[in-house]
Length: 436
Image (tube, rainbow, N blue to C red; front, side, top):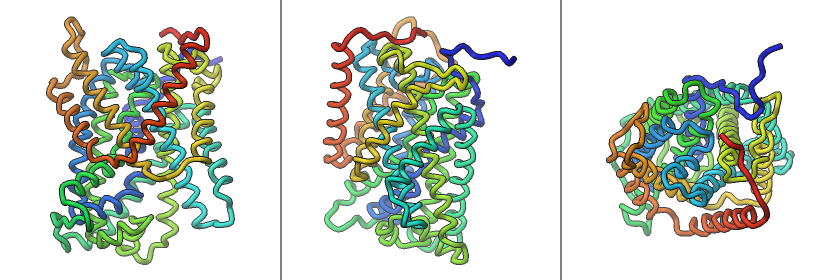
């Protein structure tokens, strides 16, 4: 009979390659497929610069996450980092809650995107039925095990990258036909605000590298693998994004891209008119699926990790005795995503998620600064200069100023929900997390 892991431990199945694939699949999901047209609508042919600027904002925080992940390889990620820095469970709870909400909202929204692609081929199928089957399938994959989830992720990631490479190759014959520094802002918008608003949208496409930290306890040698995976995944995605943006505006005018709900299909049709548009739509479906799956994994592992640290009720940290997966946390995330999917809207999703993640990035960079300046703090296997998280704080705050103010209402509503849950847990009776 094979040896079984203790029922309160996750299975360490992910090597470096699988971790990089997980990160690339998370970052490279639905964002670039849906948002490159909107970015081009704000930044014109210079939309690749908006992606490059957003990479500059993200990379400082990615380095900070790399060191934090090497210092504290725990599943709760950002929640644990803020707790280690400030020793304030309430702050740690809210950080974890916002990360969780960002993932769950994205997951619910992506389910609508998946339903839209399916209904484009089979319009008779009700949207609600597609969403239900989609979320239930993801639940089965997530529950079955991290190894199975990782294999599904790698398969979808290969298709995602294939689709992006198809777009890049399709645009190759048009490279050089436009001025890639031409930037004519939309009517009624000044140049600088328009560019930075485009960067906020482009930033949404970079969200995901921080999720790698949430599978630390299912990773082999996380102290070594985490920094490599985070930085490699972000580097790969950045190159693909810039090439995709250049290919898109080379083949299709930025105004047409902005007006399309499926802008990359236009590029493929222009470069390869003989390829059926349904083939690229199928690839986009897998890209959307991958985004939802990775967010699902992140959310369930985050709930599990917060329960282990005593920030949430201990039952959320239960591990299935056979599958070694956090089955209760998986069920809770499924319930939340389903409610949001059936009651939520797509309006301002990218802006709201960008606001949430930029706020969290600020806290994470500040956490690393506090930890690095703390006397007697042991050295990590991976270390960065203190000016890196300082620039991470500054760049995150800077970009927040260009988020659509209407996104504040969404974020404020989520914070009020988090506060209500916190008060209910605090005054509703004793609770105790699983001890590490």
